[in-house]
Image 1 (cartoon, rainbow, N blue to C red):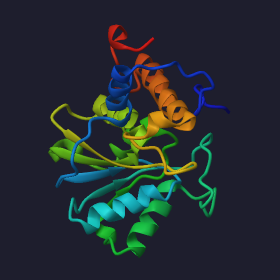
Image 2: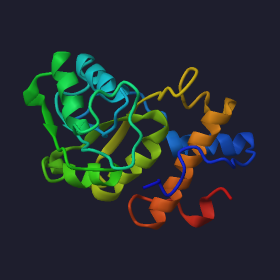
Image 3: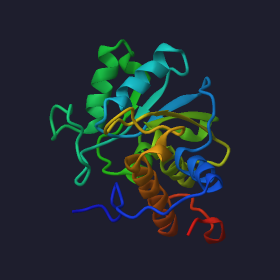
Image 4: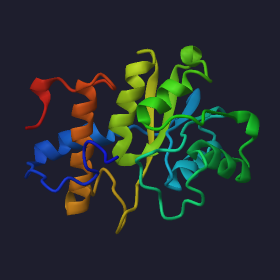
Length: 216
């Protein structure tokens, strides 16, 4: 099954500087400085950045509670370094974290979700978020806007979400909020994320963008 919206749409509109700045905050979320949080939410994925960022959060003392998500995605393309395509993403992320010194007792996980929305819904079945006031969010930097909006849809409004994204490297230096607009690959990836935010927002899967505020 192909994703409803391509990861890299072929047609990307020309954007003004103002539109680039607006799109950066929508897709990458706001540029908050990482801070001590009650828990860390690790979105599922096969990129090494998912466990590397989680490990860094632990080693720098940003939290001692980790909610790790991810089963086996039926559509997602696996990272080249992924070892076994049949093992749930959360189990690999958890193993890598433990190998790096994160105590197993600090890790809560679910292993049945297949996409970002299910990452959140299934995490609600294994972790009580009602006592959480701040949540550090580990994900690809250019997916932070969509995935944090998914958390906002299903978790209480009182939670402060702090992005802890990592630059996904497909080629070159990786996609960051300060360089995405400089390459066709970056523009295409970010535009695809924006289209998903709009579409999934319309479907009620995440906190959407009002129609009157959208680009094009």
